[in-house]
Length: 329
Image 1 (cartoon, rainbow, N blue to C red):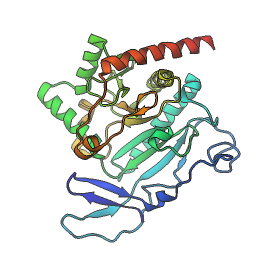
Image 2: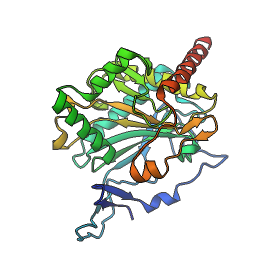
Image 3: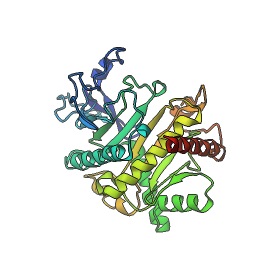
């Protein structure tokens, strides 16, 4: 039975969803995301549908209420959706045309706006897991969207930090971060008029790229067509570069961070919080994984095994190689 259990130490919820134990691993001779499977339209370019194994539901199970001061629970209300990037089973996102990837970004924008209309939803979270190294069981190119009835702890921490910085300095934290990155140029990978891709000074992953809006945009729901196209453009560059670092499919977690909704305590976040994408790629070398072990998981004391000023050179070389390949097509 799916439900939420309150963690009184961290003051956030743990989502319990025993049904996800039954998620299938990818059969070798059949894919439910491919046209002709009977699970998706026979013709599509991008497509969204409800997750077959959701951790959150618009019709959650009735849970027995806990009355203990420390042990509390709540229904697992929310939405879980699967986003298919392409009907091509082996496609990489960067193999798709700019117009196609722009359609994908528009779908994220449209679904964000629609899900935010649900007054019980507090945060809409599009994301992608890529590669068996991060637990992917279905390799067909796809991502997901979760709409939570609470603001996840990491997002809340970011919001509180940005709000405190704004109160102290009168400027948005990301605006200052971006200004410094553009000033030094040390860690910038790519940019266009609306977005910048860079390795943050503080990231704990060797190739933990951030993509951030240069202008103050807080949510995908605010994006116009120009924003959508610009984000598609820089996504193609970043993901194309990733696969050229070690000339192999590069695993990652892609996490879209935006302002919450239906949350009065952060109604002012439009002044201080930037939309951005955080990448968590687990490789620290061609055949070496950067594990999140006891220090990282148990104490939240992260460590990076390289300096990002060294990593950026590999990334820039990879991007240059990718762009040369694109030009030769």
